[in-house]
Image (cartoon, rainbow, N blue to C red; front, side, top):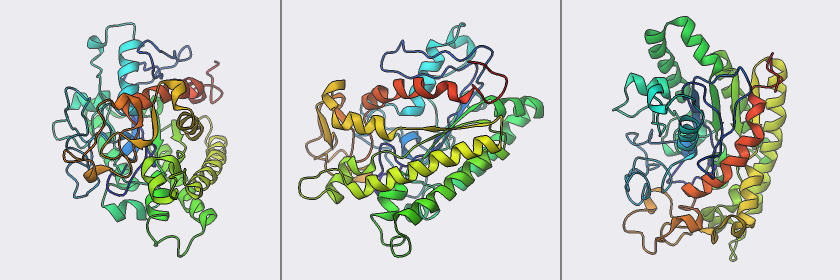
Length: 387
């Protein structure tokens, strides 16, 4: 989400991944970590919407500074290929796609035509087969506040929906109306956003603070989040997971900008994040009751990431307050480049790759327990499924 303005590991966040066949959600610390879906449940696809946390390169050809299709981004990705992913390696959408594809199917993955990585919808080399097995519409730097993507000239959530509608038409042309409706209703949708709203739009610019205090601004964010997931529902989505905002005040760049001389976690940022999360959780419960049997699931990433930052050694990390790239204090996007001095040699020792985004290993450590905790919420209690 973001690059230029500084976006976080959670970066706002909005993501919805789209992946095929009986996909079992799971994720990993160990490649063998698998979470089986309830009996009779299938997930033909995973659709992802949001910001830089799940943007695999949609910003590459967008006229914005919030891009990272250059070294050292992607240093540990397929031999060191910078693809536009805001990390040193794979991002959450890739991890979900890889593990579900290679560890949960009875048939060999190659016979199913599934993939190891989730591509960007705007990848010019994308084929129809890629669409059928999953894409991400996310754009780094985007957010629930309509002003957020405007400030850094990235793809807004409404525009991501326009691309999704375009995607639906392509699927209809191939699979037909009935099959498309089935795919849309049974797929899993993930939305990740909000970090850039708080860190970049509210605290780093004066535009919103002149009019809104934190409670009012989080109401504005909530309005955007609720509107977005309801639009997904109107387009056929029935299983929607929305990630909370992270402890944005604890990412390296925000510690530097708002944490004082000691670079403590910027408490005001975290207060805003927690307030928004409380409101988001309540709103998703309301929408679930309103649109039964659809499921709108609140996924808490704030507490798992905060605990990891506070106790990095427990998971084998050595550095939590600095990023690996450059000095680790503020470098993000264009500031994190091949000329950045002091870039670390072993990113796996760091929770954060740059001043805003986690390393591939941090994503791996975070996602296994998070997915295990929430996977059944998408399928149980919302209809005839019994878990």
